[in-house]
Image (cartoon, rainbow, N blue to C red):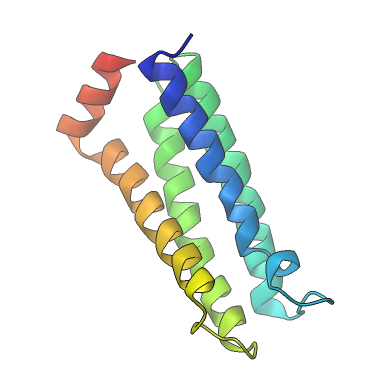
Length: 131
């Protein structure tokens, strides 16, 4: 059944899975790049996937702490962008590739939107009323 709650939960889960695009394995190299920035990007990307999965589950089950989980996941998502950018800048393609730019801005704006919904009382109450 396609309810608002189910659509939001599926959307959060799918958005979380896109953080896998920020890992070294998806950097477009036959051999994934190495280094501290890529290691940190990998760890934070996996934490974001887990966090958004937990948030999606909390929304689906209508747990009261969904907004806290969303806030933490959004912050982890924003922090994950930093080592991704640092690691990407060391590659030949750098940040000039359109796909990299879309990936970067999608995660910045998506994470910021989740944080905004979790922090802004009007947005949080609107979402809660429709869940």
